Image (tube, rainbow, N blue to C red; front, side, top):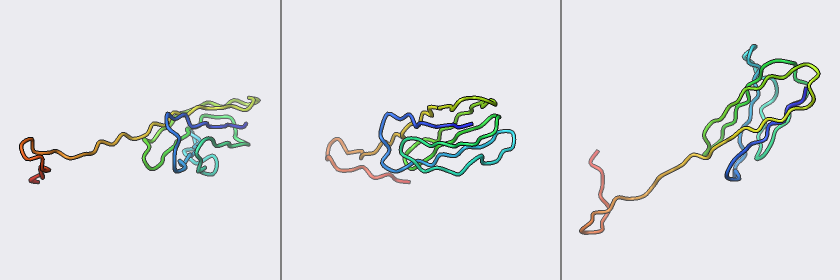
Length: 104
């Protein structure tokens, strides 16, 4: 059985994401880890339940499970990966316009 995982993102990753496939019942990797910007394919998978996981710098971890059956034609799974949202800036004193430093 062949499974192709397509990373569904609102933004194009700059750095490749790490994509892993695990056999759920065995709790073991079912193939090599892929490093990709778009998609990863694993062939020769046995029937069973698999979990696909993706992670990368600046991205929230994502995972999804899929059941693969004997005799099944190649499958494709869209795995939604969302960018981490960062908030940054300075707090300025309203009167002086100078940065306010924390007193931690």
